[in-house]
Image 1 (cartoon, rainbow, N blue to C red):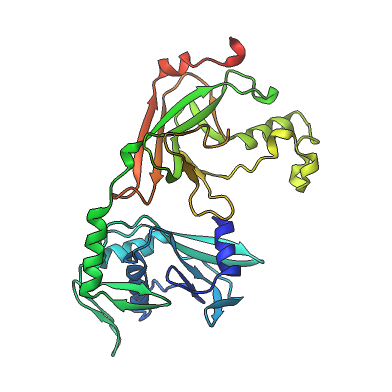
Image 2 (cartoon, rainbow, N blue to C red):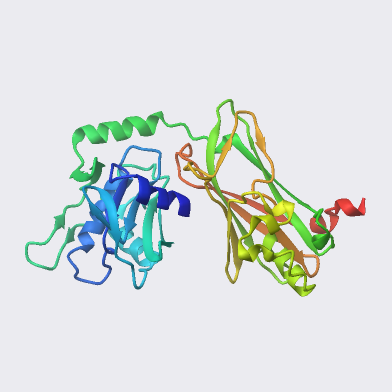
Length: 349
């Protein structure tokens, strides 16, 4: 995602699905610019496009082109924006708000995605507390046109409903398979380490683009880790500093299996870990599965489960696609303790 945002900043000007803002939208009570946030998010969500929409914060623009930056001091909380948005607009708008460091500047971006439940309208009247402030009636909606925003008209509603009824939900056209196995690398050839492999099959005659996250829950017997981190820790414990000289960012010193572009982001939380496949350079979705095709090990070998004892493994795959009419789809998986024990390490065969 970082490469996509940088590409937008450096190579694109403001357009229907891209806007630059010099400062964060305020979230404090009574600020007149809070109305601008509601209006902009509503307008982007109502845009009839399957592509992601972006609002980049901290970028100074001139004639629609980013010409400089105003770094952010403290990043506002996404949950506060979501709560404020849900208070006034329905249905719920899907978005993420994250920071990014570019050329030493702390910026942020809103990414709006898979908002297929148009129209998005005000469910509650909004009125600024200040004189001559903004006021939006119940049922009001906005849409982005070019680099401007206008109120929804009758023609817009007709187009929205025409597209909705013409959209086929394809969430049942994909199938996932999860398997546990051993590693081939000498560092991880132990029964306590398991490689979690995720395969996806397209059951249809039309290719499909997907964004996929794996949410793996921790318990007392098993935890999920990034494979590279595990290998690094093992090498450090063995004082094998030469293997991990890649911290100096010298590809010539990388072992062969680390040359490939992983395109996987890993985040660890107290109760679970999140693995997200990120789009490759020049693409907007993480994964394309060909018609009647299968993509194997879509997380590129980067999910390692470490078992301290036999345990149940609970996993949720959160999948997004513009071809899912009802928004993100969750595929739950669970391996019982007995099933975990039955998983064979290829080195034991």
